[in-house]
Length: 258
Image (cartoon, rainbow, N blue to C red; front, side, top):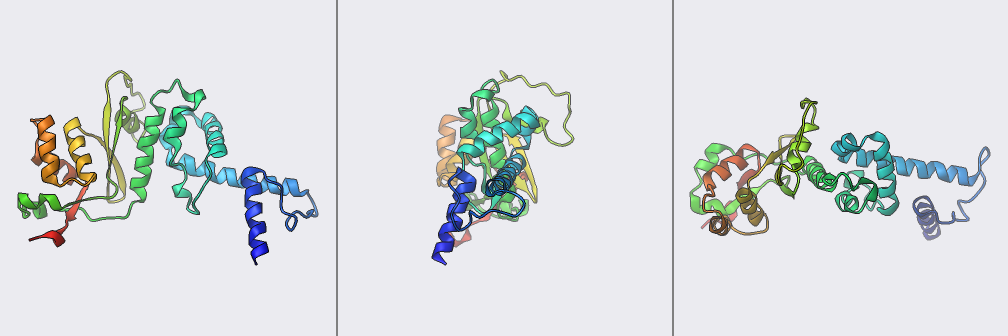
């Protein structure tokens, strides 16, 4: 059994890395050579990874076109192996890959779009959590706001480009005649999920900084004080209502109640 496991591991490396095929497996087939058979496995392997990438990055596919995306995904697959049996986990390094991918350097916003799309991908597959009702929030005294629980789908993506507008313009039903000025300023996208629908909306600097402090472990009080020191006009109530509307708030950790 150990020998078989070793041979199967070698076989996998032959598919992924082009290593020499193991002797136990390297036998001639009746109608075609071992090399031909191995190339069939390689094509299936690459095809599955390409499909996984296309599913995770549909906006990038639209922006660069199918042919260029096939070329892009081929280069990505060559340098980024799959380390999980679940293909939904594949593609996490795309944003960093695109930062140094010379053929796409003219699309200066592409790596940020990839970061936003991966956040959407993660949000879609996040564990489902019921939203916090408005009347439930109203029953919680402000001093308990430090016990807020945020939905695991919630993420903040910052960019020097209007990535929120670009993403929204490439969703089903969007106006096909859109025009986006890449010099229109930076964007801060909030990724959330309501029921089974991923949402992307714009956040202000103050709201984004406040939310990220909470995600990093600050209590709501500490996060609010720090945010108001930088942005005196920060509106805590408006920020809470915005998160509530987007299903970012899911409940309170009543286990820490006094």
